[in-house]
Length: 215
Image 1 (tube, rainbow, N blue to C red):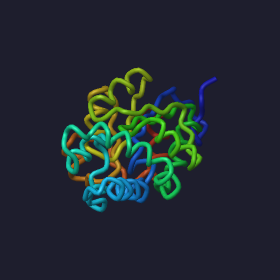
Image 2 (cartoon, one colour; image 1 turned 90 degrees about the vertical axis):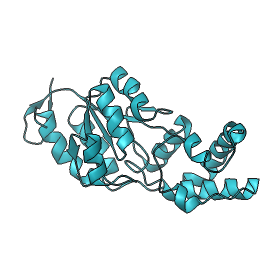
Image 3 (cartoon, helix red, strand yellow; image 1 turned 135 degrees about the horizontal axis):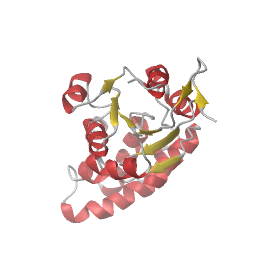
Image 4 (cartoon, one colour; image 1 turned 30 degrees about the vertical axis):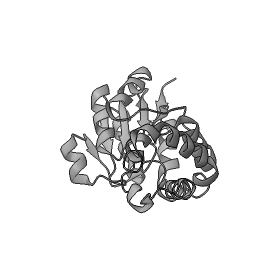
């Protein structure tokens, strides 16, 4: 039986992908705590306030600002080990995050999370906040996200970074962008976002129109 929107109109099946950091969760407080702990433990200066303005790309890219190449792998492992104790509790959901996932489900769609974050830590965030996608896939950034989006048949990818726009376009999915992270509306438009929303609170209304066949 076909799913119905709030007007009782039959809607097509679809899959929506979501980025995690600064799209579904405001990970700045937790990531700042993890960087500060790594800095204290290693005696290496890390500007945690600056680091949290660059969220989106893989951890190794940020580590490269603070550590020599031969230490990147070791420091990445240590950061990921510190992360669950320090970063999960202080990290809130972004406004509209739970409702956005719920809107996909209510319309009979499938919601997946595709993120550059270490997958176990991504899952911990979502479980802690009671956000329940159908699947979470980690370790993918920018165009590499297209592999998971294609595998799961995602026709829409929602993110806050120009890398998310590139991932959506590489997958042939509609790029829905929210300027809630490090990239502003102009950057997201220039990168090729198909739809620009103020934040996730606007997604359910847009999604209803999309599910009925519009954009």
